Image (cartoon, rainbow, N blue to C red; front, top):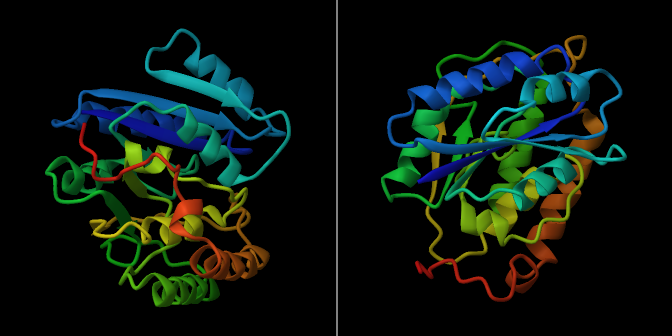
Length: 251
């Protein structure tokens, strides 16, 4: 089984080497997956992120570095990365240090064991979490609640970065969001697959402050509400996946 890791990057020169070190260490420790690729997308960073990535990835196997000519947003970077993946399983990894690659094992096991098609890593089920902004916490819980109302899922953390998919599912999904709306869009669209097996597992979360580089803001929260409504109420299954996609075709 091959694992693809998609890493969107925007102005993360201070953390990108550290997170990729952790990713490589976590991959070395995985017993059930030995074949992997890391697809990194620089979303037209204005700092030295791209230069740092080019120096790191030069002549390194299993890496693919992609670049946007204009800054397009996290969702656009994820879409670009997913299109280049070839793995049986696809995992999204942020370029900051908020999410710990040591959680890969617990994230991947439900899919590897054949129990799940999609796995979400919940920051609200984990044991280690940095204490930060109350209103961010409430915003995340509200958006998850609102999403659950329309998807009929009982997720605790819809907005989590750690989402793991069977590769065929995510590569056949017709994603359109450019910014953080990618999270509710993915959730709405996977919920449209009848019989989809979605698991949620606890993860650690080491959040950062705005001074440390956090980018999401209240405007993204408002946009997420619109995305929840748009992709649940006004987007059909036929407009969510490619027409020739059969999620239960195991050929």
